[in-house]
Image (cartoon, rainbow, N blue to C red; front, side, top):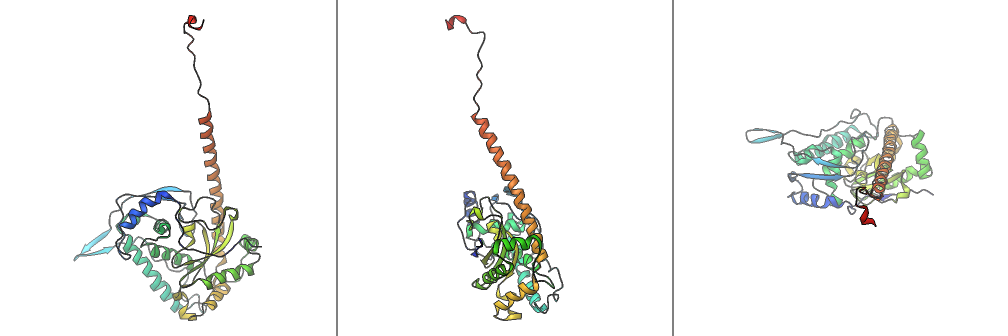
Length: 342
């Protein structure tokens, strides 16, 4: 029996008490959802291990000091031209390269308009704030805010999700993976066919807008942003999850390996309301299993690194405890009066 189950990402209680005072101040500083984020002068964020780029690895837990950055703008005739921090990355192939399975017209609207809009809106929201020094992944983690998301979360997460989505597919994709990825799929889902069925079910049953994901769960540490939905005895497993709107597995500190966008704008021009057909074409003709395999290797390396860090912290705690338990050495004054001892 597979230990994997499909889980819907929702708003889970936040576990790190250090976030509460800081992020409550942050939330109070935001007047409306579309306004730029007005951060306090000093923002100290205790974060779990942050992503370090789409192809990067995850580091250890740390305390993130976010220096206030000077607003970067030039004024002309009373206007301010914002210098964008985040850029719109093009897909790693021409816009017509996925035809006939995904049309150039769909890419022009999906990437050229929707994805572009998320990037531009995010830059407007964070320019001149202390968030204007963070990585995209750190912005996502901070702004998730225990599930009570702050205004810039949706744009930040959607930028990341779309970058990840474009790199999850390729011309001439689909088929079946091989190597360690296939072995892990067969171990955790029973067979590749069972995995495909579970992934399709997650994508098709995500109500409204959202995403379906294949992720590697190797988090034996506390989840800083939300309650970990899987017990610790299911670590080092592949899991299928689905998430609403912009939410992604980063908020659970999982390592995403594959995603499908099931927002309607991702497929309506090509498939109208036939989401199931779009999902089938995605799995059979578009998935880049090479990209998924590469991400798996990164995730596994991350897990090994974390185990080493945990072992080091354990030894340090044991050494500190041993030092505290040592008796205090007593010294006797040899020149004391012998008559006092008689």
